[in-house]
Amino acid sequence: MAEKLGEIRDVRAIDRLYRVAEEQGGYLTANQAIEAGVPRSTLGYHARDAGSLERVGSGVYKLINFPEAPHGHVIAAWLGLSRADAVVSHVSALELMEITDLIADEVHVTLPRSKRGITVPVGVRAHFTARPIEKGDRRQVKGIPVTGIERTIADMLRTSGWTEQIDLAIRQAIDRGQTTLPRLRDELPKNVKRRLNAIAEAGLK
Image 1 (cartoon, rainbow, N blue to C red):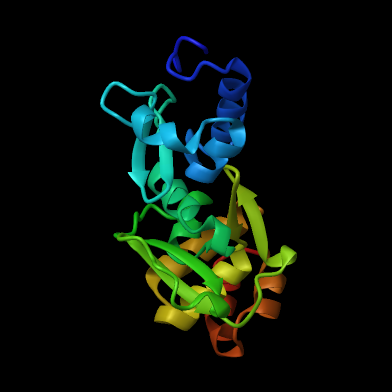
Image 2 (cartoon, helix red, strand yellow):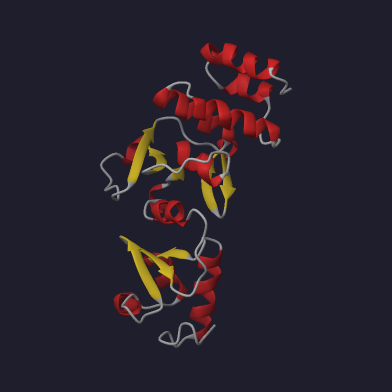
């Protein structure tokens, strides 16, 4: 491991750096690197062509020698806003939970309404909410906070209404045991009851 990060001489810092990045698909923030023991003044040096880090966004880096992570673009986008209590949401949440085949053009995250005015990186679509994303409405996927199935579907319904994508996501989530029709009926707007009944009649209990 020390050979992979030869420029960083503190072996303990290297170990800490890898432990942090390993839980985040090989990505980490500048602040995490500094907390691991990498001097702020050397981050630019390590992100050069022959360095150990690749800068993938404002204050976000990837370890060069770390295997490419599935959905790495989502992880990197979230890290750029993680200090603002961002949670991956909407279609990007479905993507991380692997209940959609679609890859959105933008990474969707939800932030508290109090964070309006924050600089949002290119390629990220920020949704601001006055409804706190409580512990029961979020889960950890690949080390990243993601809105749970019910909250994700509810958010997507508010954004775009019922779509074929939502219908498929619900069917897959139920089939995999990630949610149930009673839970969805409790959390989703009453005007989609007919849609949920159609799914139940199709054989999903």
